[in-house]
Length: 114
Length: 114
Image (cartoon, rainbow over all chains, first blue to last red):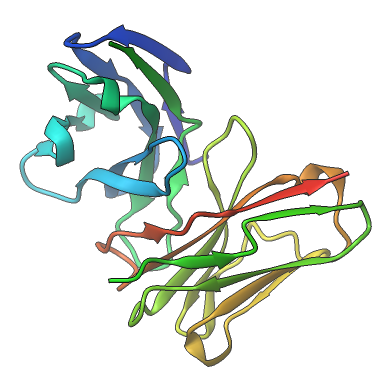
């Protein structure tokens, strides 16, 4: 079955600490991969995406993610978090064909203390 | 550019009552999605429209849920009759296309069934 697994439910960091959020997926075929973020009181918005090419993708606000096909992983990283990064982060996967659904993980809540 | 609009933002109903949600996508976006997000989980696709045709409704509980997108613009999602387990946030999203296009999410409607 197609699924996305996010390893951490809640991560607590101090400002300037490094961040890595794990994401593994189970999906047959070519995939597109996404990280979405939901800041408190705001809409879900796209942080970054991978469709093809360089497996290291850079997104907004200094975030990056690396697609490792052999490990079915798409981990999110940021070298130095800020208090404003406090949010819920969702990993999602989609097949590379029209009509395939975007499948989300359960999300990881990141709390950054100043 | 105006975002995806949804109404109402909050709704409280009793079980066995009916409820309807409205979504207005970003202008020009041909693809529209309805998601259900239960507390502690990621969004789950209920139905996807391409213009006014249904692309995927495999996870829509058709005995009680219905959705339409007349004229390929606005969409409504209806639940009749509601059950306690329908309590969730209902998200609408839209995109320019189906494969490599970003989905833009609305603020959601938080439904509580008592």
